Length: 465
Image 1 (cartoon, rainbow, N blue to C red):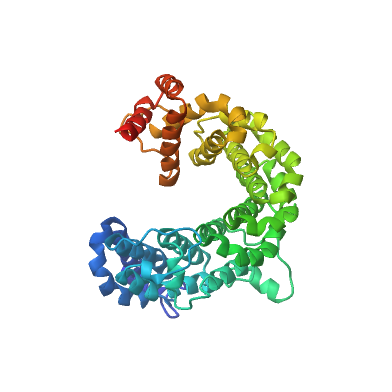
Image 2: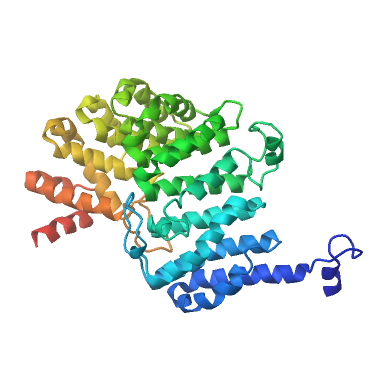
């Protein structure tokens, strides 16, 4: 009853904590977040009224209240953005607050500092993780313009990287190891491997480069020395997966700016690609593809070991290897896009085309399609790529028809095309070009498609109309 709630944990002799009131406060904050999440734009007119009471809880002594606030703030930003949709953002563009609506700017100016401060300084792991997740969601939604609107612009990415470094180096206030480090200890392989925190840090450090592009380069330089220790053999495979995944995503988006790191990272990527853990293998394979695609001359000099490591994953038959095989196809495709005729294209393209369409990791279809389309379009590689045109068209038809495994769910309608808008537009342009090159052959190939014939014909007919 209420009397018991007021007694606190020590039986009532000392100061009591009103746990019922704490639960109510946390539940009320969570309820506001749920209303914003499900109400979307219709909740936007109420945001200004609730912000004062919400921000008053930012320094609350109980972690459940602070954690609920961190999660709710991202829902409010999403609702506000739904009411005044921001302009589309492009990776790597200069941050410009003018791309955001007036109400969204107002909300960010009041919520961003709270989220970043919580991520950097809170002493509760779950609350830190909640703040990191909310920051990631907001950055992915609004892009680089979020950083232009931060109170400490233009160095607004630095506090986020500082907080991530504190966690990686185990000196964050939410970590038990921080006290040991202050007394002269080093990073402990066994301490503070809290899954929620590491997943949130990984999400943040793989989201920021998606928005910043090449502007992520100086931050990647700072993070690299803190991530490399997690790739030591003494660390668990989950640490290897986290570190190589963060490095791969960062290198993928800084592109050529990170190529000088290839000699350092390639051995770790190759080792992770053959690790016993499936997630570690996925991230290692992805990293091999990124290093190969953006490594320039240094990558070309190491191409044989890179291709050999990928071939091992393509040949593996374990039950949990299907996703990794799709990742290996994506990695090969990225490398072929970068080096074209400098590679043994006949074998590389056969390895890609024979496995299309990719159904376990559908996102890897985009680089595979781009690879084959580009090599078919280029005169110097058209002859070696031409035999794979039927496999390419089959994959295109499958994806335009909704992808998946091809079997319609009993309670679901048609699936949308899993390709992003940019890749789908490239596919449509390629189909029109291919039909112009050889109309009769193209017509015969399209009519022979097992799936997606109507969608491909619709593209061609729309162009003719």
